[in-house]
Amino acid sequence: MTDQTYLTSWQVSEKDFPRGGAPEEQLRFLVRYAILAPSTHNSQPWRFRLAGDTLELFADRGRSLPVVDPDNRGLLISCGAALFNLRTAMYYFGLAAEARPFPEPGRPDLLARIRLDAAQLRPGEWGELLRAIPLRVTNRGRFEATEVPVTLDAAMRAAAHGEGAWLTTFKTARAKQAVGRLVAEGDRIQFENAEFRRELAQWLHSARDKDGLPGYSKGIDEKLDFVTPVTAYLVRTFDFGNGVAARDRELATGSPLLACLDTARDDPLSWLNAGQALQRVLLVATARGFHASFLNQPIEVAHLRPRLASLAERKAFPQLLLRIGRGGPAKHTPRRPLEEIFIEDARAAEESW
Ligand SMILES: Cc1cc2nc3c(=O)[nH]c(=O)nc-3n(C[C@H](O)[C@H](O)[C@H](O)COP(=O)(O)O)c2cc1C
Image 1 (cartoon, rainbow, N blue to C red):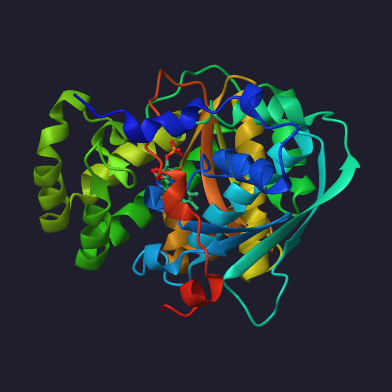
Image 2: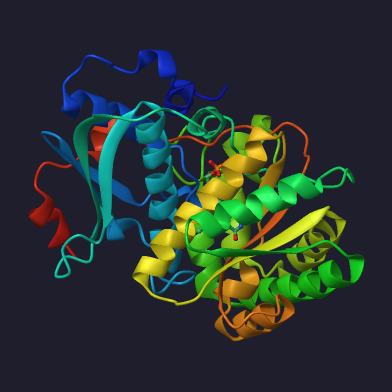
């Protein structure tokens, strides 16, 4: 049986918000929403520091993925997704606050500083997004043929735009086939690389762990959790690239909608913004009962990235490739407990690399 301890993070409830509490207590509560963000290999590469009415978000480079993500692009996108959850909760609970990205140029790991303000905001549209945070899950199964409504397509594009990114959607069979071919090519290239396989295997964790990818998130029966070390050994040792490529191509072409999120530039601020845009898109889709999962291979393999940009017909930098549709049930992945992600001494943490 799976130990459910590290799944309790998902039970966050707006009723528990400490409305009359001190700023520090309120900010600590908001972080419970932040950590439900998606992250590369469920690495959860974020840390937080609380000081009175200020909350700081840091990149945790000790959780980087040097092979698949050598520039920490995915790491900053993950932190951006956490930041969007934080902002959503902040706005919903009526906390006017400033969330400044990269507030100190000489401190690249300090990704954002959030400072509370006494003014009160009205929750407005944020309730729908807030309630979607604990419902969102990466669903790697097949999606139904049900089309994504044009209103949702437009709402997701507006969501990306609102966070400084752009979402191109692919709906026709021809466009999806072209994208699917790139995904398959990316899979084959990645799995040929023993270093890539070794890194992926390192993050295949038991469902009892507090991070990493449990087998069930990849479609393996939960009763087989005890064979996780064997699965990791197989992934590390054998090149399953052709099989993975065939499956991903089928998933891509069989999904009602594919979507490429891109940014005008390709730097840390753009990655942080891409993460915020990603999460906003995912929450909009979740709120309407749709699922998403990632097919980032043509972005992670550097020479395929311009080809994806040209399929999107944009002179920009693709940051994420998603498939969107209605899937079957999918279970949440674990999250690290809050005590582990709060730090006292930011300078020491930044200097530890
Ligand atoms: C920047 C980024 C890249 C990701 N890339 C992939 C990917 O290529 N393939 C995949 O299956 N999942 C990918 N994911 C999804 C994560 O594996 C997933 O978010 C994580 O395991 C936590 O699970 P959850 O999203 O269900 O909470 C990515 C997530 C992020 C934020």
